[in-house]
Length: 320
Image (cartoon, rainbow, N blue to C red):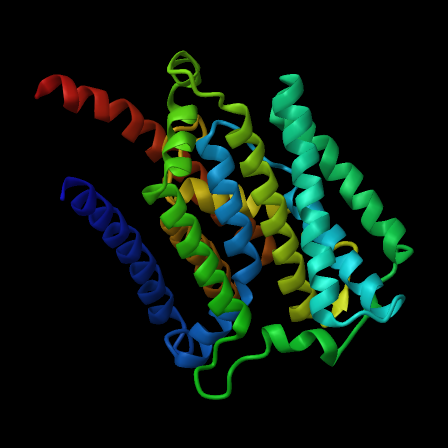
């Protein structure tokens, strides 16, 4: 019951923050609080949601994956090449796309965990490798695919949301259940909290740490499918800077950059907050430099709050 109460309070707080932000922009823009605006918001976030879900799992173990944006671009490029050059169906090309993402994630995990190299360095290298391969795959050109891929991001006529949004919600729920309700999820939290204690308990943390990088790669591949579907084309520049947005969403959602604590559902709310902030600022006519300043300030504030919460909890525990 304590766990449920704590989680409910967290979700309620994040939902209140998002609703407050939406209402604030609704005051300055009469068109913001409309079904059309919220449907458009829902249909633009699936790629970031699934990437943020994978990033949450990686950060909980104490690692980081800076390659997600480039892996998205590479997987989208592979999807386009498979359909246009080899005439594969969308679903067959999508399976190859997910396989490429899994391979990139496996390389990140094996090199980082297996050789004991900081994941920051390894995934930074993969960021460049994947982006270069994306350019080579497409010949540095955007490849138009068209209706064959657009169905995934086309809104349902009545609901107004796309299959991609429904699928990203299912991924988010599955990752949260795995994190909170399975032994694997408990291993991830334990590894991020105290990896030495996990080793002393007779548990090898390496398989779980490698697995989260593989999952992050697969979800980046899925994000590549969503992005290609939304654009209707295969763009080697897709996903540039997405890793920063994903980290920002995860941090806003309360996941610790030091590992050991996090929630995929809260990361979803973090994505909503960032997307709402960007959409709201655009509707009120804010310039691009101003939008970047505001978004950056929100990220810094989230990190400060995370640090304050981390120092506050021991003080509360000692006072009891």
